[in-house]
Image 1 (tube, one colour):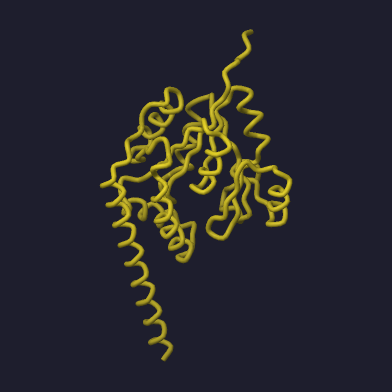
Image 2 (cartoon, rainbow, N blue to C red):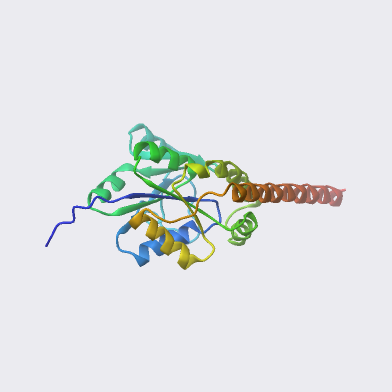
Length: 229
């Protein structure tokens, strides 16, 4: 049996909340055998159905901070009031075995990874529009209204980093999105160029959604005060 000498690639997948990153990653893992998922570490509580060591390593703030001090994380970032990070040993061991290691991480962490692994393939997944992103994010019903607002505000910050990604992929059709990302990893070709008009339009829609939600929240607060009187 010939030993596989090919070194694995580090594939960083980011995207706005609600774009379906987790679904895309799961399909890549099930449809192709050359991927493995780097399980991130987080201090947030598990969502329904999530399993420790499978979806995330769920740890306390103290445990996470000890990993930082010991150099056990490739990257780490604060997001939505919680820590997220990538354990170093798993990534390095699997790349040495020839596996393409997927990191599903936020923009801040992706920028750290690019410094440590300049050859990493950075892919950003987006929806066709901010309205579609909002529909998916609200529709999954896993966050409070405050958390949803925070994710919209974070998206405003994230959109400023799109130029730093190697590839932009629009998740309009799941099957097409999965095939396109796999094609990028195998050939390093594909994706779409970042159209400045798309960025401007998406940001404008996003700010409009945030403003509408703020107005609705103020109206609810005024109604509650009036009712108490």
